[in-house]
Length: 292
Image 1 (cartoon, rainbow, N blue to C red):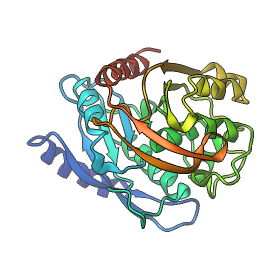
Image 2 (cartoon, rainbow, N blue to C red):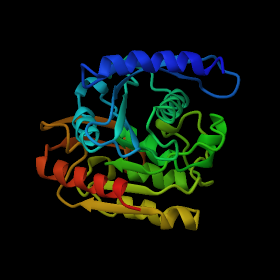
Image 3 (cartoon, rainbow, N blue to C red):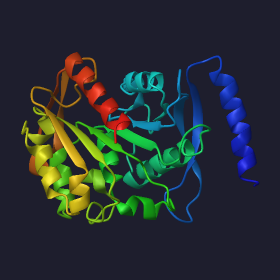
């Protein structure tokens, strides 16, 4: 009962804010595993607008950081469709000094899941997550039973998961248990994707993703490599043939990548803004979330 009182007080504050504003910046408790200290991460919460549908959506930014403002368009749309939304601010801007620790990132996501499961009007069994690039890496990992065991989730699980332009060659390596030398998997067990929690997963892939050497079959190949037959059956891949990595960034640009392209090679990541793909992706996500 003592734990519920602070939560109730926090919700009185949030509800008073959201009656006047469409969003509220809050702090979410999280830890990095059993017995570790409680820390906090910032997040932007939006209540469901109009008729709430009882669902919530956690939205995870890409590796450039929250300040790229890529997640807002999704939060605003799905909030207007009746979802309570939460955008995690794992870090604001990527700089040379930014520390990206996978164990911490996963812990922050678990904090977001636990938070949304307690939002008034949200069915705790109807909390889903979507992410872009780095965020997509995280959402795919949430199909792993390890995630829920390590962060002591009990019976709490994500309902559905959506990954936008994930780097699929890395995920295929993980499905094989070959994550060595892939920085984003640092600290995670090699078997992270080999024991499944069996959660529906939608992958929206770019057919011309530089990380995957513009191989349109990279994500379908990953889906076929999933060890657990039930998880494989729950995984759907939609490839946008002409889209590039970061199609929703709103601008065209490129930058060099070291050791993160197919087979741990280096390449140049070329990003081309595609409003058409953005809209197609939004509708694909909405359909996936709203239908069994």
